[in-house]
Length: 278
Ligand SMILES: [Zn+2]
Image (cartoon, rainbow, N blue to C red; front, side, top):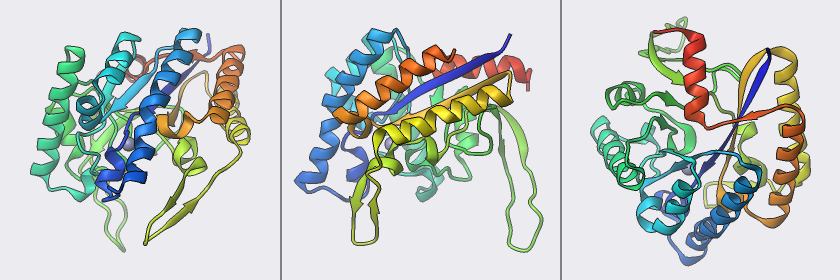
């Protein structure tokens, strides 16, 4: 019996990403602040459709926006780990990374009563230590790598990539990788960012992006009997009115197309059963 899973995931960054990039003047901060209004809007929508989603919430957001984070928990959604301060692990020492990991997990435990099962790195850039740290801290899955599209796989540690040498594959671990893609992330499609170093001026039509996202589901259905498709969204990005309308229509069409919606934790458990014990 074919089974095609969709995970709606929301990275509830609020102001954390702007602060991590040093953008602490009032307007960029307010841009992140809008995520709090948008999150409640998204929660209302998910409730009307009876869909449970996964919310990757930095410790910063848990401690700055307790009412909104409480609403995520009250809605029955999964709360997963997204660092405390939204600093990419690749730019931290091992000690800094572990301290941030522990601090954020404590915030999640206070919010939900249990530590996170899943992790997604800020800005999708793992360090050489991340997989090992996630295993040491009892995580079940990661969702920061791009090595597949529809089929979760086991994350490796100790890969060696050197210029002029063949790639050396590291050891496969028990950590389940739930793959992601920038193409299935709302941020690069929609956001406008201007810093001295870069200009990102996307502003794509929402319905065109959602049509591409839906096509990705159709291709999964055509090519695999069982698979997981993960969409990554940020409340302050997807929560604008015209994007919400496009998202709502896409979700309704995916339901008609037979998508099975579930949290990433549940999808990772199903993936683990299929992959067998490590
Ligand atoms: Zn983020």
